[in-house]
Amino acid sequence: MNTEYSPGRARAIAYANVALVKYWGKRDADLNLPDVGSISIALDALWTRTRVELDPALEQDSFELNGQIEAYGSGRVTALLKRMRSIGGSETRSRVFSQNNFPTGAGLASSASGFAALVTAADRAYGLDLSPSRLSELARIGSGSAARSIFGGYVEMHRGELPDGSDSVAEPLAAAADWPLAIVIAVSERGRKSVGSTEGMQRTAQTSPFYSAWVNNQPNDLALARTAIATRDFDALAHVSEASALALHGLAMSARPGLLYFNATTMECLHRIRRLRGRGVAVFFTVDAGPQVKAICAPEAADTVAAALEDVPGVTEILRAGLGSGAVSMDD
Ligand code: 2P0
Image 1 (cartoon, helix red, strand yellow):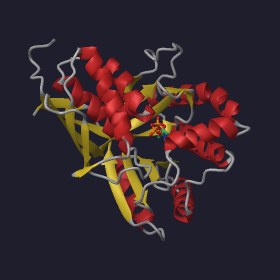
Image 2: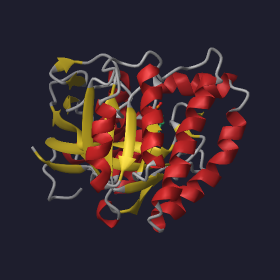
Image 3: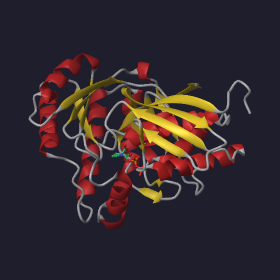
Image 4: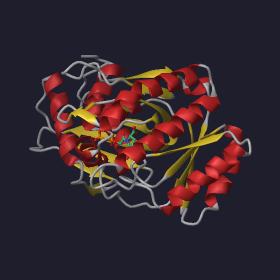
């Protein structure tokens, strides 16, 4: 145990991430092992702050999100705390207080920042002092995309091969400062999505006739994105990222019954972004399991992109971000 830690209570902050090469599909539901690797960027403006407080008097863990006792997702929180307690040989239950500064469950990666903040805070509160790679593995068990939010900048999540999941972890590809990009998010619905990612992935894997093609193609897209990031090739990153996002949604639509995460505003935003790029603006789109559109652009293009998306009927809010850092813990 690291004596610099002060076990008992700790806080952490972790940032949301957006995948450029998308994760969709699991090969093991219990350990949350992905069928495909993915590549993402961290967002500095969208975060979860979490406090973990051990209390020997507690019989069960409790989980508060944005000031309210949270039932949705609390099973995953408890399961993860139990796993971390068993690593540290502790039986003491915890109170967990979490705060998101953006809508939860609306396709803005709240589970990514949420579980990354949770494992980072619990690691310190229980005095475990685990490596970032181990924290990534634990965050993955909470939510696949959370494995990526342990790290900042450009991040690759590995599919891994081992049945115990110890190689299904993320690692940094490049720092935010190596290639600063801006993100403009067009929000058109703040509510929770109708079909959550876990269920959507399961339905897709079980019923889409195109699922194996998706899995088989992923190594190509990962290689293209890795090279684009290493060489700072914006056009190459734009092409592979849009292709991966559209392939994900085509795949999800091909599930039975089909999953429709887009609304009419989503589609209009995609057309606007393509038109902007046609006029020479350095911008491309990506969309996750919800209707919000994320425009990735050169920092100097962000005002133009925000103005164009704000103007789309149905866009209720524009969020702006730069590239974020990895999860950080601190004493409470
Ligand atoms: C991604 N998404 O790569 C993909 C693209 C949404 C669309 O990862 O079941 O909340 O908890 O592992 O991580 C969202 O799925 O799913 C997601 P679980 P998660 O960002």
